[in-house]
Length: 308
Image (cartoon, rainbow, N blue to C red; front, top):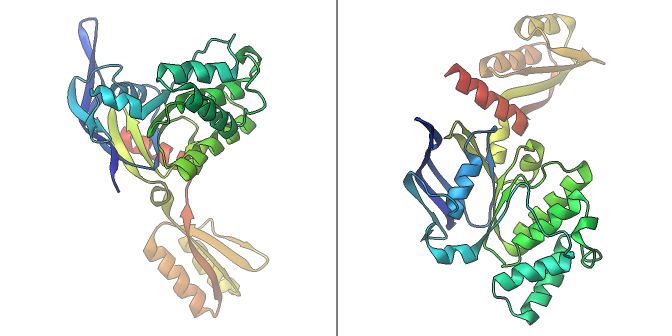
């Protein structure tokens, strides 16, 4: 698979008075074409600074990056990318359709192409019936959706989204998530998504990375990262003598209606439980790896950082 974004040793140091603050510290990362990539981290981790360097809004102190094989300083790259900041500002006297027309003209789109593109985008973001309303009549969720439409007016290959669901209610978050998923399914676009909404990221992203204090601390496929070390074993038909032995190994093992449920991360302990069940003529119903949430992974990552 081709690489959409290649980052090598990217670093940004800010001068703050007489001291220096390293916002991004030798970041190296690849994002593949056509994937939805989650870029995570707490406030101050360096996420927005990284995005601004990739967009060419600020210059790196050291390191390099390419987008679609071109250096981030190449002006031609700007036609292939787009960006929706966390809190975009639009002229609220414009209608949704006029907004898209305005930005389309900035990209030099012809009137015919722009009309077709505007119709397609309003349909994509679910605002086909609201295109004639002024933006001051839009809800926050509608404003976020017209913002995504505006970011797509140049038909970019890579879309950078910074907190696209921030401050939205549950229904609006679902609508934005569906739009992002459709971008991949229908257009094969690469989406670089920075967000604090971990559940949204877990549901929509193919891969994620976690930043902390400017450093990359974890990156990988979402499903692989969320497979935890715990195993759940469920058994039944185990006499009380066998259950007593199991509780000495896993004190919080549960029994209900004759069925045992036990969870442990140690393979040796799980093996002993299996042997006990078999020795007492019980039945193993299932042995299942436990899937953690992205929030669990996020918390674990930072606990490990603190211990380090």
